[in-house]
Image (cartoon, rainbow, N blue to C red):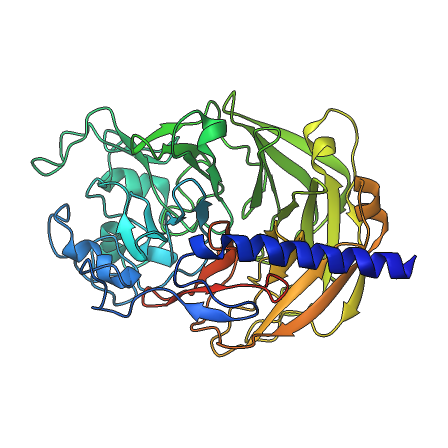
Length: 469
């Protein structure tokens, strides 16, 4: 049986090799060799289109929609609604357009009410919409502290300008500078996005480029003022709309989210290191949120919204600290992997996560502080494995979690032993520090993972696992 399993694995590898070799002619020029990591973004000032080589180069200070150069914020940064880093910020990968999409980033600096992206086709950062000139920093600057009470915010931002129930800026407010009003348009106030950005494919959403689902508990400047709401951004029309109901709250916050194409629904789970049984489900067809509760509680790592959909087995997997129950991220370094059939979460009967058996062959991914905070796992459809990096500048490592050998039906994946292995890049290293969250995005066209660091000057990199020859 072991010989057959080895032969099966060899055939699988050879099959992938032939498939990728057949596609090699259509690969972008920047595709890394197997087992290597390369920088694919341009250095500052070197992009053929001008600005856009780095995220910093598309600062609102350079945009025609920026009404004035900004004042200084609490952290000493000078900008209108800009940021210098992407702390506590995830992304959504738009597979329809091959764009890494951001909305909101970093502490008090998250005030640009428009999505931006790194476009893999053009290899540059750019804006996808023109925001309203709203700067939530102004009040915090004048008051000298944040967060502030909703009553204090209402004194400065009237309900005619900000809808406090839905956490959005109103385009028809009469006080916008001349030419900036956008009648009929709303834009959600951006906050730390963590794991709360999800791309809904156009084939499911009913348009050409899909939609961006933005949801979760508000953090940052408006963390104590806004109700938890959720919005959809239509990439075809560049417009936001509300979901049919509010995102359910009751204590849940920094969710990791996965989208299931087969059902057209999204599943969210996770609240730091706190144990929880609560799963959120968003139905694209009805635009409704519902709540499902498991019979067994599990916990993710603190600030670690790393939920993954293992597509071939249709398992929702939550990487949790080995000792995550009520402990901080700095106390645990290994993981438990809890798996639940997606259909069970989406159904009506009782369900419970199952602890996967994992064989450790090498170390575990740790960040530069020696723990597993902010490390996210991503699914590779080519070899059906999960991958992670540690988001540490200078690191030459990546990790692979492989499903049980010979697994075919769902129960094989649940009951068999998964294998965790540590790998060294054949060439290249991680260029900048960063919280991985869900930034490690799989791009089918290049058969590579794409990722970027925290700083707005960080390089965008691509790596291909060694198996994908």
